Length: 297
Image (cartoon, rainbow, N blue to C red; front, side, top):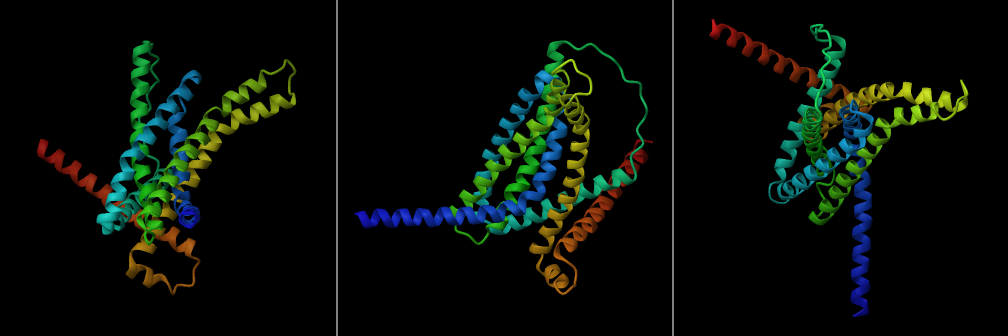
């Protein structure tokens, strides 16, 4: 009896050790995507009244947990009964990530011309403010759903050779850590200017140490969000390039002999594929618009 209990404990310890090791591997694979997730959510969670920032962020966080509650069982079922689908979803997701990264670079290099309109000041009722808030929350949760699918599928791909129980534990750990970590950091970022303002108003002295720190935090917020966006864009291309390099075998064999660091090859792969997808999508949109214009005449 005692030996059976010790054997069980040993099996559990071995399993936990495997989970810890594989969680690190999967964490490294998904770390790049989390940078973009962080930048996107920091941008979406800002722009609200100071008193509403944390409630809005909490609503988005609950939506993120619900997203993962939906995605995880479906991902585990696919992994168990249709593992080939994981690779297909990974490659499709890689195309999307590469496109998103390339689209951000294209927008930076060739910004779209927006019509200049005078901002309209309008008084909104409390119901209208809450309605717009709910719309922004829904948009943020939808974006989180797309990113969550990619994070979970990439994590599954990283533990593809492991037994099902290890897969379930590792990917669940990654999903929880991703949600808590990302939204915890976002909460700190969006409240950074508020904390800075409190430091500025801490005393009546001008140019005190607290004033300098406060002004630094207030001025740093937009730069932090912009910096995260740049890091996120690079991460998107690296993650997508890594997906293509490691999951398309003939391409992996083709570039294996090229004497260039793997990270550079992955970045260039993501960049090239991203701009190809961007060109195809933009061309399709132009053709559709021309067809619609001609058919309406």
